[in-house]
Image (cartoon, rainbow, N blue to C red; front, side, top):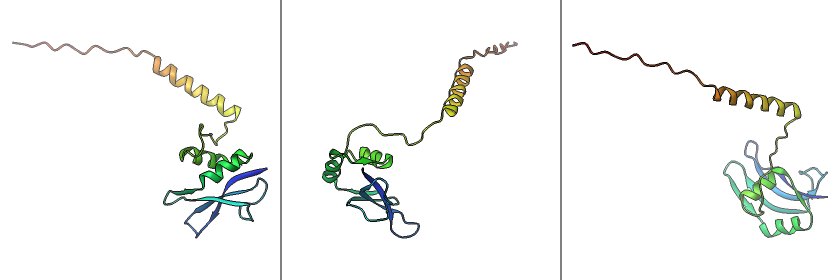
Length: 122
């Protein structure tokens, strides 16, 4: 299966990436089928070959989560962003308990103390 992924190149501590089309199981630093653009992470400069990207996606190429979100940002493809983090069932339960505790704490009615009335003496 073909995949569009990022391959890092450039100097040390200056990350620059190529958007490449390659086999899913291949190492991104090895030979690839086609260069589809570049992304400079420090300068936030993105150069895309939008027509080639849409062509390969129409032919069945998959995208990584990061590439999908990048293409949605650049309006090359339409759709919603994909969350990269997967929550385990145990973590979901903890978050639900935390949310429930916060809601009950917010809905508790705290008694308001009346301010002492000041009496003016003449």
